[in-house]
Image (cartoon, rainbow, N blue to C red):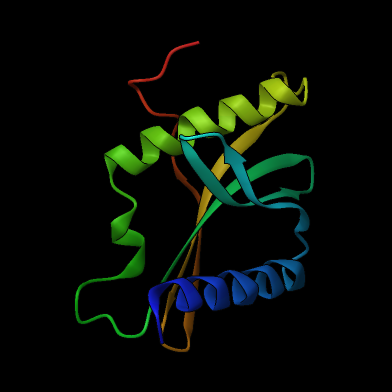
Length: 121
């Protein structure tokens, strides 16, 4: 399967998985021009969740969640703050989650990392 198709299928699978866990999906593929996108924005009770989905066919090259390195965390931090500012939600509780899909196995890492220490507001 091509990487784009694999990513889309993984995101679809992640959305279904999250809905079963009680998450309310607010946005998919929310983009900030020329900077990047957040795969899924959802609410888990009263917490805004910025969710990165990583999908691999096998774990031969490592676990999917390992691809969310410090640079990706910084990018997601900037995107999350931009989203919260654009919606006037800066006083809301928020966190970063990762959905890691390897083959048929799905893992959810809640509160997977903090706001990047390189980011200040």
